[in-house]
Image (tube, one colour):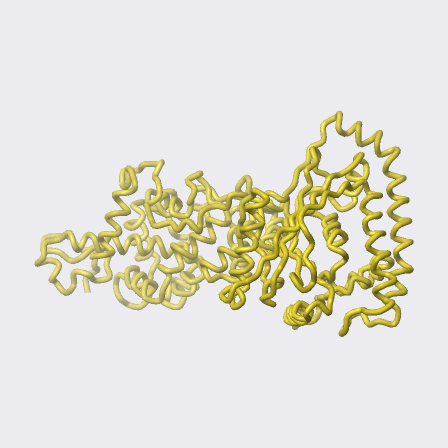
Length: 544
């Protein structure tokens, strides 16, 4: 009776159901607030539009400022290199002990001064707020929002703490030697244990009682457009030590610094920024945050609390996007979809739906195959119908409406992933597949013929003249469909599961609407299109 009640509620919630209403609205299934679209759809895009007047200003200022600043930047870097080289002479790339004595005393103060001179030569005017904590008070700085390579100014202002950097960066001429002077925590791309080793090194340094320099981390792990704070990686919070949040703001009328996955390139941003009279930046050191016992055992809890505090101070929302969303954006672009089509809020979707990267990436391939013929990289009812090889009908519209969570008449990739996990996969169990196969196998011979397949689909979709040859041939290897072929297709295409279960619900409701005597008949819930009735009633079952 439960399934019947649910199906009745679904039918009642859909205006015009069963009367060919083209404007069918989705059944009112429970929708968790956690699956609502994020407040910021795409934090990885930046579009700075330059008007004619602004272009002229940049051109004329660039004639004067650009060559001067290029020369000043080169001069400061060349001046810093010998001090960095002296301090790191005869030292291994991966340090086991902190630099002490003359190495740190001679190079460190000079590099701090030259770092400030470097950003001043690029036209940056820095405003510092708050008090910088000592290494004992807060071994780790967490800096956000991370939006540009110019964010390195936080490292200069904080007194050149250690940073986390890739191994390859220390091999870059000139820059690599200066980077080694700040005693970085190096990450290897080729070492499979690199992530574990990096965490261990951060813990070792953070719990040294001030012996090592402080560590500065950008917990977002990638650049955004500063419209929100995305998911914080737990690395900086795993040691369970106090951290000092550091806020970055760029309060300029023209944004020439934001470096995102979709926007200006590195060179373009350097030119645009260096052609400005000045660029303002604010660095705010917030009060030190000390984890409680629960947060020490749960770094994600600690990371989320710190992120919420920083977002509140910045006046921006938080979202569950992460670096994996950027990878999906790139994959979407390679599949000729709009790059933003790959955004799903990976952290939330993977946690709530128990999906890993490979699973979501596989769904992106499926989605691209359906949406390839549409405009804007979204699935409309026509593309949905064509993919399922079924005509547009009331049942198909209801299924489409279940996927279309925001009722805009199309299905984006996020809605597609949620729909498969919430609607289709729970219905695509072994039991449901077996029941569905028996439903199609009218003569109970263990195989489904094209005639049987056509009869059931025509009845379930309410389309008497439905053509199913194409779909049948896709499932069958010969003239009929075996159970293994049916099961294999159902597992690969869970979208059909909801159609099967909807039809089974309707059959169940039909049975429970019969008189009690008919319900008691053992054969009443056989695997046929409709239950057996009286002798004078026509039967869909073939004569034995």
